[in-house]
Amino acid sequence: MKILLRCLWCNEEFLKPRYEYNKALRRGHFSFYCCKDHSQAHHAVKNARRCQHCDIAMPGKRNNKFCSMQCRIDSREHPEKPCTMCGLFFRPLSSRTVYCSRVCADKAHSIRMLGWGNSHYKDGTSYSKWFKETRPLIFERDKDCCVVCSAGFKPVTFMRNGVPAQRSNLIVHHLDENPANNRVENLILLCYTCHAVHHKSTETPYPWFAEYTRQASESMTSKWKETATSLLTVYSSTTAS
Image (tube, rainbow, N blue to C red; front, side, top):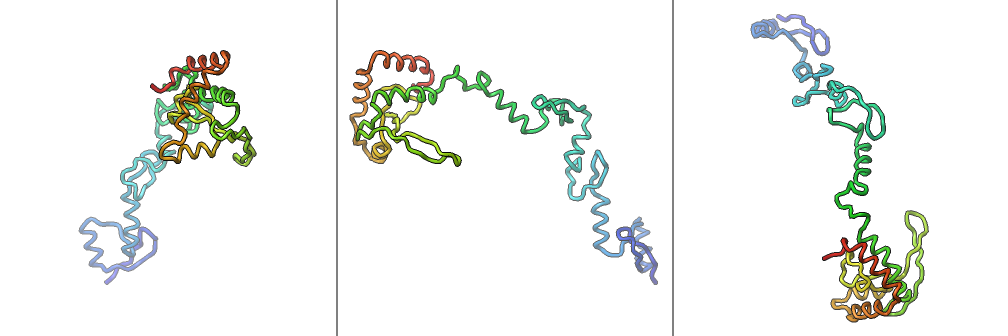
């Protein structure tokens, strides 16, 4: 004998043997389903953890307290406040949150890292800035020519980000390969070809570089020497020991 029941999941009527129905009642089961799949589907939702804010079921999220980030934010009791970077009002995740987004936080960090806010700041000095200011002195001392092959200065045109730009065909080379050492005695003017020959050789074919830079620097005018000495004094903190 069978009894007519209604599925709690799909709301469709179905027949179930009376002995199975009575057995379920004795076990304290009062929910009936037309098939096993509907029983599992309903139990997945019915037994799922519920969001602590909106109380909706969260199937498959047994370790989550909230169904979404918005519910997590809304559950906080922190009032809205303005972002210290852009000024827009937002609801912070904690009392210590001061920026509305990662973009504003990154922008504020960039500003803090300028000047004295940066632990590597050295009163506006750096070896790259030293090199940039010393470079014209080397061109003047070596007469705008490669000291090996006497190739003269010639601008080379190239494309940078889709825009034509120019650079020199001559390179200011560091004798000791240390970019932090920008003393005039450590710098020499080479063309691209001679520079490549120097670096690709197991032993440099130009062992006279150091003597040349020493003598050439000594023979320069007093004004040139004064400028070189002044730069060395300003950037002495960046010089490698």
